[in-house]
Length: 118
Image 1 (cartoon, rainbow, N blue to C red):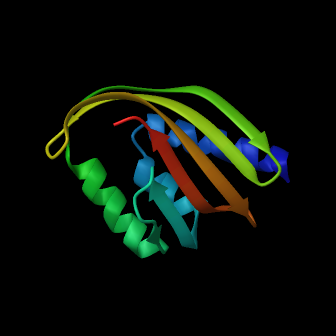
Image 2: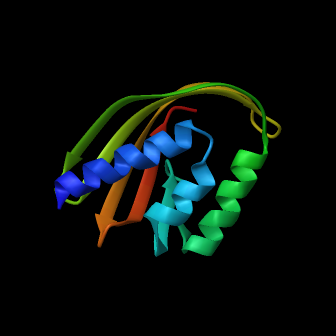
């Protein structure tokens, strides 16, 4: 199963990098997904996370760069290190490294937590 998860996270990353983040969300995330930013309270459910994703992506006013720096997998976990560089209408200029840790079940992400400096 883990080899399948690695292939899926690589496809998800390709979709994000090609501007298809919302399509990737629909394809790879479970209906009951729980997503969390650093130590913020988790957002539960695909609908609530869809709204959050649309708001976050819709607030980007200048996109400069995103790169996948590393991908790892073990069992039901995948880990992706990202570099992001953009300007957001609410957060201003952001240039940062981020680690996303995903837990997979039945071919879908059921939990994802993002770790990054603020």
